[in-house]
Image 1 (cartoon, rainbow, N blue to C red):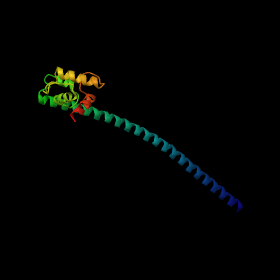
Image 2: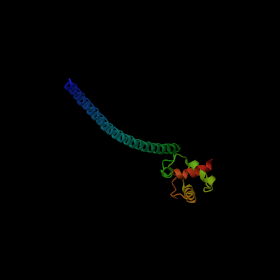
Image 3: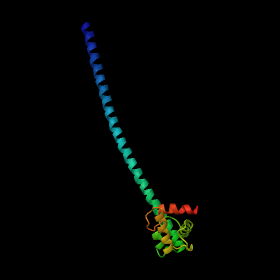
Length: 153
């Protein structure tokens, strides 16, 4: 009977040991798998961030294209796009009349507001740019227009 109790105890010990070993193996496997999944998740997060950046670039590019198209349509309607001169100067959605009005109010233009970017208007644009520390290229981009627009308020 003592031998029998000893065998049962030994058997119970072996079985419990196997169960503990299997349990620990399962925990180790699950921890390893969790680490793999976390790595995959981080990689997907990086991919998502890269796609968001690319999407933002596409949106900005599309907005610029639409803005240029709008300027071209406005110039086409007013007949100013035929010469191409205004479209060479205007890089923002604004009419030549508004440009001349702003330049006149700023004190850089004294000609008629005729809606044409001629030599006097071009000279006034360059002078405004020089006096405001901008590149004096005679092209009305965003920075130049932001300064000019203040004179219309």
